[in-house]
Image 1 (cartoon, rainbow, N blue to C red):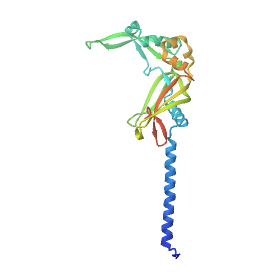
Image 2: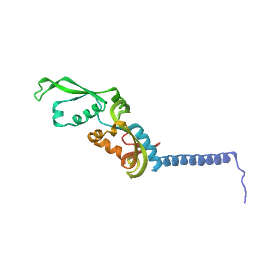
Image 3: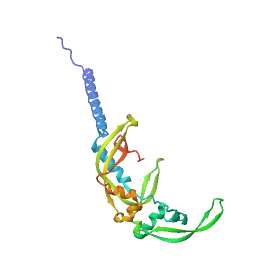
Image 4: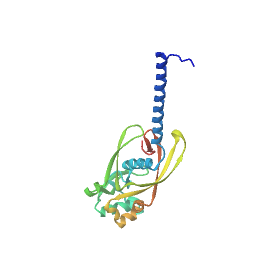
Length: 225
């Protein structure tokens, strides 16, 4: 068979093809690596849950603005604050005084009324936590609340997937551990804050759920911006 001499141009073309194949292989490997990084797995969701709970793991009482004024009507009807705030006061976490406030009646007529005003004590302020969070518009917002415990991940139990592509979501069930404030062991606290008591009792056994979406670097909780 006749052999043709390899010209420089032929060698350059063959080298270019080889380099192109190598580059394509590297790109495919990189893409497959990205795919693996968001493939559903216990480790992936454990990392995502740890990140989520580091930002949103505080178990709080939905008492964001202090001092809190309690009207006589709320006391007479057994409103939530009327049941809960005296317990916090008994534990030394809050203190109360009588104050006069200006209010308007149904006819928009102003008049003064007395309220019982609860403020956090020095001991109580230790449990008022403020955190800076990202807003949907890209800004930052400082929010605060009176908190009773902090949750951390125990283990991932299972997950369910729904949707495809950008619409893909994972609903992850997990158990948790709790670091609770000492005063949450008080029987009256457990009575007037039943949800808090239930979450604390469920440490290591009760399951919570969180939804996650895939990103280029892993799974991120839907609740996080």
